[in-house]
Amino acid sequence: MSTESLQAVRGMNDILPEEAERWLWFEAVVRDWLHSYGYRNIRMPLVEPTALFKRAIGEVTDIVEKEMYSFEDALNGDQLTLRPEGTASCVRAVLQHNLLYNSPQRLYYSGQMFRHERPQKGRYRQFHQVGVEALGFAGPDIDAEQILMCARLWKKLGIRDVTLQLNTLGDSASRQRHRVNLIAYFEQHLDVLDAEAKRRLHTNPLRILDSKNPAMQELIIAAPKLMDELDEAAISHFQSVQSILTQHGVTFEINPRLVRGLDYYNRTVFEWVTTRLGAQGTICAGGRYDGLIEQIGGKPAPATGFAMGVERLLALLQDDGVDFPREAMDVYVVHQGALAAPFAHQIAEQLRDANLRVVLHCGGGSFKSQMKKADASGANFAVVIGDDEVQANQVTLKPLRGGEQQRVAREALVGMIESLVASW
Ligand code: ATP
Ligand code: MG
Image 1 (tube, rainbow, N blue to C red):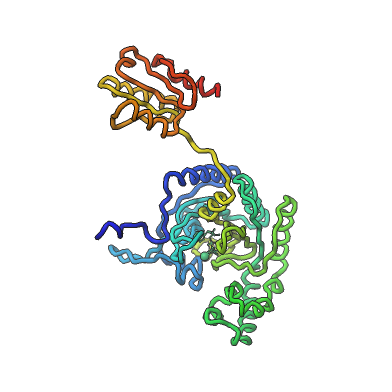
Image 2 (tube, rainbow, N blue to C red; image 1 turned 30 degrees about the vertical axis):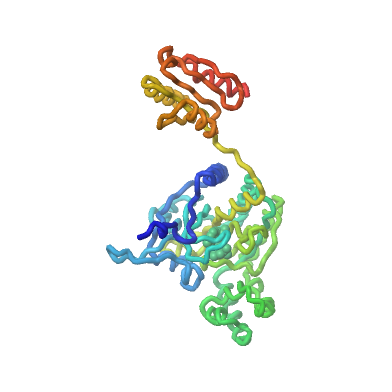
């Protein structure tokens, strides 16, 4: 195999150290935010039985039909899939470990998801989501809380220009009636439907409403509305969600065409959208999925959740020029001489005992070349150690951002660094 061929898989990105700093900052902000709403972390495997996703997401969805990385385990013949999303795994884990036994659960997870899509800006084959799920809650209060949470996160991160799209998908009886109406309606207009829509007609007619084909828009606009089939309970649920949002000053747009690409949703669905990422404008999406727990084999229980696309959020932040605090090095330890090397090791450990971030120069070289590295490291101080320093049990402390260098007794070093930092 030639070395040229050893590249990352198409659509799967390396996140290099410079960029990873932004990720770390983002993850810290997100974690604090989730904990401030009482959500607890859960970690599921990246690989699950293929049957889980087929059953949860739906056989005739884009994800299951054409986006999953599914394979047979060559060693035992198991049918497996790299997770394309987290909700199915999360629900599977909750049921397997009986977490809903005596209390509802607020859970979150984050990590890689895999979908075999055509790679483009904001759309990758390996991407990252932060997923948030509230299981065992039936009321509109939790739907609204999750949306308010998002609004708070956008504020915390400094994200502007995102809008909230909201819809209700009603419950299964209304959806069934709507489905029958839709099929009957589209059957009368077969000449207008494109091949994709014809294929979907009897399997997933709701998805036809999502088509971007200009030739079908007039037909779609005039199609039977789910809104006309909704029952009392679903209407009042939706109204309560809206009124809580309004009370909190969160504005939204009701989009009756928002149907989501996964089959498990009912009642409230929402998307946070920006116009600034081209066609990949949805940064966060979710809704209620009251039927899923039973569908996966659990005792029926309501649930609601959402997932954010991390790459898209970070792209938006970068686009906005939103800066973030970077974690700088405190000290770079420079040393030369046979006595100096072990002494430098000890000094470095002593500084780390005081919770300072320390790079110990490795690999030798002149003082001059080591000092260049110290400057380039971004550290605030260099600690310079030669054999004469060792003999005096001292070091030379050199501030790298202005200020005089000085000889400091070993025991006084930490205190000196701390007082200099405090005086800035
Ligand atoms: P889209 O309509 O953009 O394909 P989706 O409805 O398939 O999105 P969800 O399954 O709801 O997406 O996933 C939640 C979020 O994860 C999306 O809003 C998006 O921000 C992000 N996301 C989904 N697919 C990808 C991908 N292939 N690459 C990067 N981010 C993605
Ligand atoms: Mg998609």
